[in-house]
Figure (cartoon, rainbow, N blue to C red):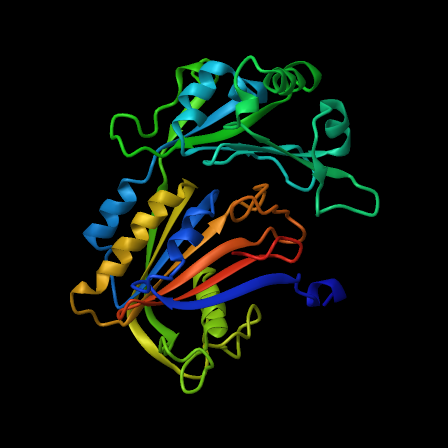
Length: 360
């Protein structure tokens, strides 16, 4: 095996244990500040069909739009700002752009525009920014942050005109964008502003796939045992769950040349299990609602004492949690995962690349 293949990329993995009913629990914060999510995986032991209440929650995920060749400056035009950013909880992320090679743009639901750009673009823009933490001895990448909610960015102001001019005249770049806005009003959610409808766009809905598993070896868990003293410890469980999601055989079959992985020592066998995957531009508010439904799954007696929810962020998003800079590095890791127990305890893993800021 090539030496470089034997070395796994370094990453940051944070673990937290708490209870959903604990007033100091930060589970909502972790979910709502992870802005750009592309995949959610739900694993339910001893379940063969997606429960109706979970299916309903997923079907209510916010619709989003793919807009092709959208000039970045259009997002700053006064009409567009009024109908997107000023209304709140608006999400925009450039699509099919590589964070380590291309210019990448995002608008956070808090109203900040993030431009992660190469050195040439940065110098042409002439906007104030900072060196990227994903850089070399000589800075080759910069991050520009523009607070679109600040008074200095009111249409007609000096700073607003300067930023708009830079993106319209100096660097009139076009990108494909994923756009969505979370709204509690049924008649507003998912609607594309008319100011953007002149561009080629498609309305999209999160896609769902389910897979029924059988005769699956699974680790025995206890919410209070995080040291693996008689039960599977959290990091071993995360590794096992990753193997299951990737359809890797957990039996350590001697005839297998693909994997020598085996289920943790403390394990039993599931008669059946359900793996549900949801993909698209998935808003944190919708994921929070799904998590609440998963918590209530145990209100009726079940054959399992736990289930799991794993959320993956876009590998090429310029941020991970909040405004923490994110870069691809070697793998673009950018995820979190809950193990939800029947007594309302939870385990939480949060992972990013080695150069990212530590998750909150």
